[in-house]
Amino acid sequence: MRTHHRDTSFTIPVHHNTGYVIERTVLPLPPSNGEEARFEMEVYVRFMRHLRQVPNSRMDIKILSAIQFTADTMDIGDALAARTLVDLGLRAPRAAFPMTFLDFVDNSFRRAAWETGLGLPPASAMKLKDHWDRIGEGDCGPSGWESAFRAVYRENRYASV
Image (tube, rainbow, N blue to C red):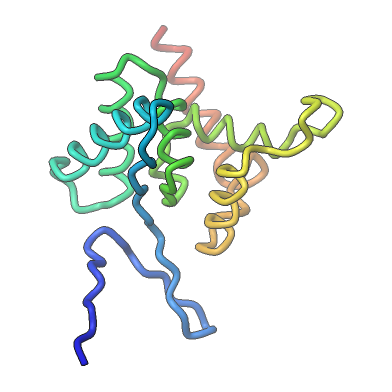
């Protein structure tokens, strides 16, 4: 009986005491065919092409660079490029996403239902948050280590303006 070998070249496993493996990085799938998927397909294709060419061994750096490259070449925001890829199934550690997208996700979980009128964060953001919880990065919001990083990041950004 022939078994299929799964290509794990783009995944970094995380082992827990339960004995199963959680993939730290899951790459997106191409969008389904349709007129409305043209934008998503362009984001996907540019991202995947650039991802292979980033000269770095760290997957989170490769993903961040590919997101920023995609956003720059399409003249869209980093957060929109990241959100589109997350909608297509991209799951990665927090370090792989631009700060503007992390702000969007964090703020969407902080908002109460009465503030937005919608009640819940987007489904893709909820799945990404579940992924972060599974790989041990769920408690890195503004009350964790990230708040100090954000303060330094914003201070440098304001100082350079």
